[in-house]
Length: 237
Image (cartoon, rainbow, N blue to C red; front, side, top):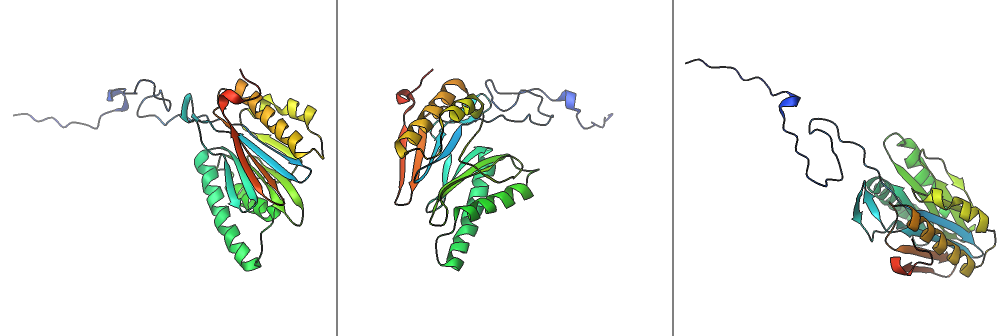
């Protein structure tokens, strides 16, 4: 009886099997997965007395909406928060690391850490890992030393203090609107209206932004959180 040695199957012998409607890949099972596109809209600005942070709530994975009510504004410390865009896993990991180190720093100081210190921690980690992360961050908050502050940390790990910042796939639709309407020293009501309108405009035009509009008002006395349902936004499609 003759026996034949069976060689290792070649790539072309594998049967293509991709689930119908799969958002992750359309290539062969033996090939590397294609990159997944993500999208969001985040916007933060200073006002006379603090800062206002805003973000949509849609988490997308390519063409698929993985979560329509996610939180893209995360707590770093009591009055320090971060708006996240890019890879959710990368930005969540960075936030957890900074939260850990900042808590230790607060114990050493015996008082509240500054917003500047939190932004520097994010910058160091983002820059040192710039080749492995896809993370766009806006850090904002209030402290006794400098009042309300906004720091932008785009891809690559640079850190820039700015009066306002927006990022994510929807930001390209609203930067001109923000530049035209933002002015230093705005009141809380004016700044909140600007944030809500800007988010609504981006969500109505960017397919990767949507869901609700969450916002956070951070001032010397308190932190206020709110949201606007998608069908209640001031601007719609």
